[in-house]
Image (tube, rainbow, N blue to C red; front, top):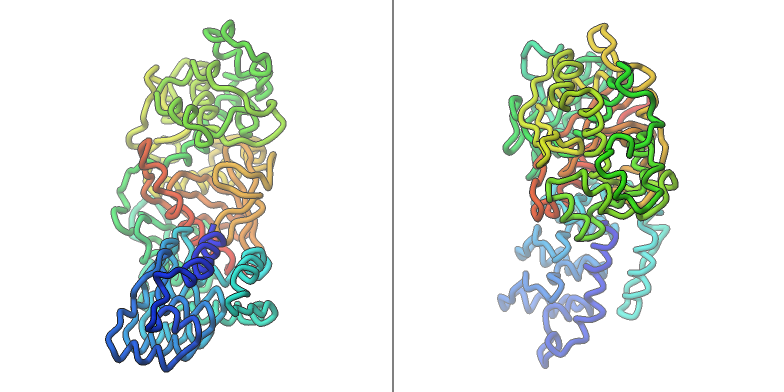
Length: 530
């Protein structure tokens, strides 16, 4: 998370400034900055010294000046043409460091000279995201920095920082005049009623700020806002478009859950208490861990079956990419007892998809088209199959952003769409409950991720979380793809993005996924209470 980034970014001083490489007979610029010697710094500037020289951690004289509150030196370096957007190895820029240490004069000087306030570090956070969080969120990291850099003269005034963080946050938000030109008007088509934020009781500038932030994001494809059943905001970026069919990754899991609820309603299944193994007779005799014979469909839906998150071990990860899943019921171990805790498992969702196909004597796509996609007027694109011919229940469904919003509306309206009950209301209710919460798994740490999402929980292949005062449910896919349901505001937010598909490419996504989390988290945090 960004806390670690900040720590690594500044502790370099303890190491680097005592190295013989940085100390010579003539005072090094970095050392002059550290010692607060403005005259020596000016001499370096006049002599044409490299103002952007980086040490081993990628830090420049300007970064050092900011860290140690050398305000006049920082201003001199800024005025002399120091690079305002240079990144250290953690992706943090001068304005990010200035915000963290709450240096308002330096923040203003950076903004006045055109520093990019929208740059995100490797944790997907902008400088605003950093200081918008409560002080307590970062106290541990302030403690460590204070202890590490105190010998070099750094003093961190906690009360001052608590007081200044809200002020710095406001400095980093764009002025309303900057937002007036932002266009997020929905396209006129026949699949959604459109309206404006004002007509639906929302501040247009709040919507504009989110779309303004979105325009600076490299991997975002689409962003939609629906309020009271009306599409009030729509924008596409980078490779995105209104017609784009792209893999929505694990958003697919929520669709699979819906199809299982429909299969249950149509009596293809007796109950969610049926045992998983009953649907895989071909492997029953191979199972040596009797706990696997006790796993229920309910536990599978809840990600409490006991199978591991595949990214925790290369063996599990490689197994996921074989495209052969039924035999993995036997081969993969249980790492906790079924029903005792949350562990995110793509394999488990794949097996749910196979169960649906087997009990309906169909396939996931055909069953879905008849009972879900066609009733919602959703046209799906490609949907990958495994090597046994089963559509993948965990991922890879291709659907447009607008059609994702229809699915969200279905759940927001308790399973009804245009007056017709598509999914039982009871199933929607059960699916959006919290059966696990505040866990650590799948990139979530103690129920938190990014700078805004907290109190994270899990239902039947649906997530839940809070940002600010608002609780919400969400379908969540790799790369930062979301269908977010804000029940208290009758609102849906849809985000589409690069799915980073591929065995190796998969691991390049996290900073962009967190960026999307922070994008919508910031917006939700600022939404008014009902």
